[in-house]
Image (cartoon, rainbow, N blue to C red; front, side, top):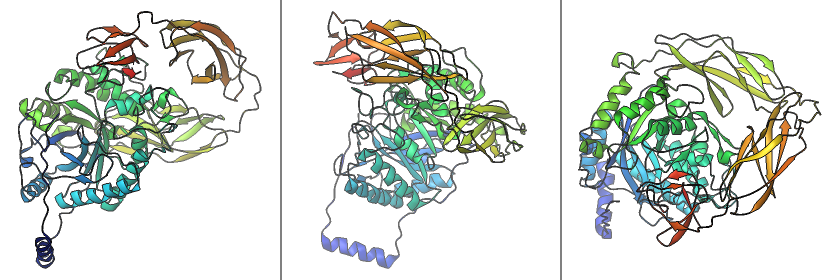
Length: 611
């Protein structure tokens, strides 16, 4: 929390007219954003937020920011006409406009980028209609042009983004606060040109939580869950990087279906890997959120224990980065899905002021660590040789096998990425199989080799048409040995023995009542059930040709909650479905966890659902 002191000025018309005439005849020009090229993707970054206010961390003049920071996010531009008005304002704290502009230009002359960050904890913005959208665009143009910022950072928190009921596909959002934001950002980017930078700093609740709960489609879920995903997807082609806040977060379920708590190497690796690998939104395989490029991923961390929950020691952060960027395991609980990602862009911190307050522990130590990815402290700009002779070695109706020649590099090739359409996947070797394709469809593939500095080189382009749908009419055998391996008051964990098929089983469907869920494994967790209620579950198997087996049924009754709600307390182990009371309200546990001070139900909607 912080205090904002706002001052509004009303000028008499005569004075205002005099100022306008003076501007015209003195040839005054607004400051235009610096047209410098964007930072090379191979440059490892330290990004920090600079306080345009005083919250006890200490004041720093903008030009005096530590030289270890590559990008400075001025915090914050905020609404001036209400949450839904759309008009954004900014004025330098404790400095004149002239001094502030001079400081921006000074930092830019040192090769730094200075961004304006919009929102923050106190600056909620909801672009609910066209007028609010237009106000947003117009006011942001005024701010950016006046102060000469290199770009802007979207730091929408609280209730700025949410889904209307039924807005279930992140690829085609329908909720105005989301579609208007995407449209407004594109207009601003187009207005200032390709060198104009765009970053985002969402909380895990608005991104990674979308794997487990997606607010537009999940019944009884918080309608804000995962609400940044359509914004990221809709702007990924102009997004410089995403810096998810790995702090002030409840435990989050990762790609291995285990939840991880902030402050640990496992948490940082698991959360970053979700963005580098992609994931099915709401666990629905039909809605696969594609991976970001590794240079689009920055990890957000608190600078010290005062600046936010989830502070992670320097040594623990470096453990995470050694595994994430070099593949050096620390023996943790999480395993990377597709190997190391040396191109990961760097680190962000809240904040520059708290870093200085903590004797620059964050910026100095992490700057030294990241410098190792730049050859001898000088940026390695030599790309690997081209991964030549890309060919398709085998094609089926839903898969393509690719192979190519190995690349070489001055410091070593760290891996390859295969891209087709909006999908990109990382590969360690010189061949791979692309599954899940549509029959009789043309796909264009390209392979890129990358080195530790993030330099890339691209292969030749290959277009392959998958085979026509199979004439296979043989259905898989029915799943057997269906049983319940665990249950709570609101969920049931089912498992079964795999089906067999002449060409292979591709998925299973679990149905109960009018509900269903698709999975590729032989286990499924069914959530959102009522306590003490009998349910009949049926599982069917499906093959690549679309043939479906007969179903196997099983009845199970969820646990009762005989004790009723109990008061919430810290350091208590809660299971899914457990009811607690807090400040007069009742909450249901959404993810099993051991509570900590600061994780009160009202503070962590990722863990607790208001009843």
